[in-house]
Length: 214
Image (cartoon, rainbow, N blue to C red; front, side, top):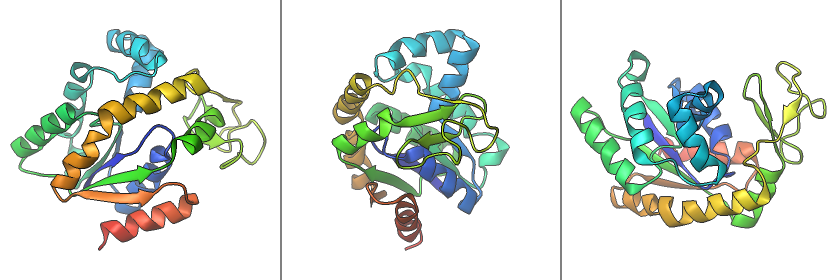
């Protein structure tokens, strides 16, 4: 199953992606994780991307398209994949379609998680991340078993620099202006699956599975 997952920042794409890849046994390809890894390692790509991400802006196409194209040709993607964080623009979607055609494959569905902006801001500001394993929590909606500590390795949780209210509002505006046209793009192809992301985590996942297996 070849999928992409759409939705504004804080919509819960990462959490749902984890559930999806476990159920369907496909790799989770997150450009966000790859970019953060490059930033941590201070690669040339990471330094360029950090300037954009710190402002809540989208990373330019040329910095991500080649990376994704290489990734989906690997052996573990033969039976499918879930793209999370890519494509972000219609131009990227067109480039992805072109690459898939070269490989003789196509997308099965584009999952669109819908959440109101006010709830997105609340979710983002309360988000906490484990800097060791990358696990994500929320002080209200998905707290760890021990306050401030990762359930997996007990590392102290941190708030990402880009999870401030001002940056989140900017990211939502950027998404609305540049990324939301993807909804129309995939709707026109008959691939769009809309899901109410304001529900409990399990309810969102159940709706995704029901939509994929119709």
